[in-house]
Amino acid sequence: MKKLWAIGLSAAVLLAGCGEEQSAESTEATTSSEDSKDVKKDMMRFYLTISNTINAVDVDLNTFEKMKAEDLLPEGEELKAMTDAAIVSAKDSAAAIETLEIPAVLENQKEQIETAFTAIRESYEIKAEELTKDASFEAADEKFTEADTMLNELLTEQGLAGSSIQNEVSQ
Image (cartoon, rainbow, N blue to C red; front, side, top):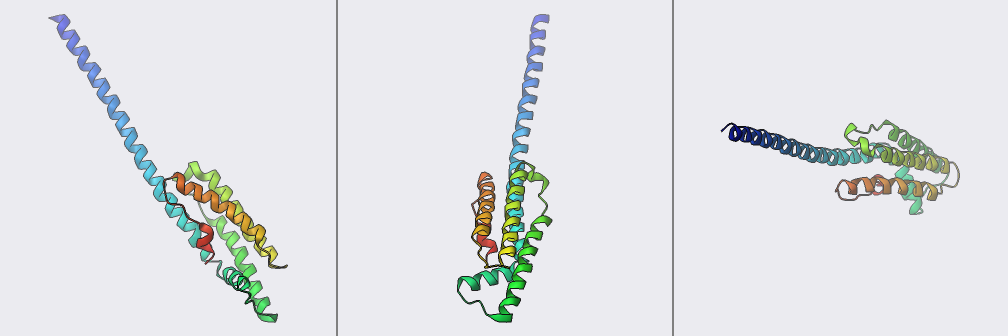
């Protein structure tokens, strides 16, 4: 009888231990799933913040670029005023990138985001410099495309639909 009781007690302890282990694994899986949802949600929110931040200051630059593309730039003093405004807009856009704070939940993506931000900032700095010359934006556009690709990769890694920050800030 004592052997039967000892076997029963051992089985109970073993089953209780297994139950706790399954419960811990289940809790970890739930936590991981919730963390993944948080990362997705925060990544999308942060991505939108990037374009909103830039769009708040790049209006004059966008106007200049559109008018240049359509060969509608004015001449004389009006062109000078438009160019000066575009330079300020480009510099403000570069500075605006520096104000963005990467959410803590995106810590694993921080390095790639910072690299993308560097490319965006450099793109706007190149545009500001080019506006003092012949306003050739090819090199700046290449830099921005690099950043756009990096940010798009982050979106798709999280299972989100790809997007183009370049399109969103060039309007």
